[in-house]
Length: 322
Image 1 (cartoon, rainbow, N blue to C red):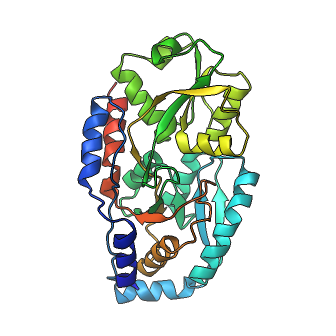
Image 2 (cartoon, rainbow, N blue to C red):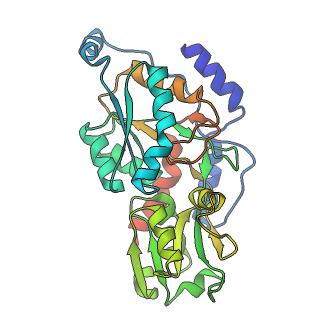
Image 3 (cartoon, rainbow, N blue to C red):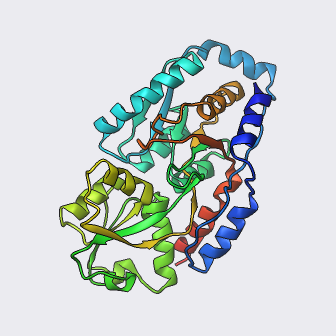
């Protein structure tokens, strides 16, 4: 199984170089947007080493329900409905019951993963890093391939109303702004790092700063006129435009970040090597029309490793150092 999984990843994600993220990081540090021409992330063979004691301890849990925490992108009821086909697929592929748990916020998802209340969590890069800091045995397994770019990365954007007088980031001064969460990469870390680079201090320069708690709530605040601009995940924005929940003729993107490594599906330290390997294979073999845990239609998954998220660690350092 391991050899087939490795070959499939190499075939589908040919030519990925971890050096790419290093180059992207250099661009990010100098605040320049870019569009890469090749994929990144790490295709590594699953580790099959396991002790007899570990094997024995897992025997009693072989048929237990696998639970994955998911950070809130959309209204929970809608997100759960969208995720049911993926839960059904994974239940069949793993021959075990599988369910998603939509958490109320990013912090709760991290807490659940670190304390072992869930087996898996679908976390943003920044929230994954927070979880890994608290428990270094937490491991990223796979991340989704972006439907638009066909690459394992995404971008942060800043969105404003077309009717506003906001044309540049400097025009945001004196305006009301919504971030998502301090644990959101696209909804806080990436735009905040760039704000600091160009001399904008949101707490000082903006009339109001709010943390909405989810990408959908940020967009709704913009639509309702509660804020003048928001930080968002471009993929999340694009999905809502496609679903006609947002009229793209009324809103525009005034800034876009450098590519960011895609959201990882991470396993808690209690998950066995066998289950990790089975999950990797099941997700890489998953039909392309299934939604990913964010509720977006996916085009597949790719293997990732901890080092793929170093670019986000560097952005976090820039934010925390100010």
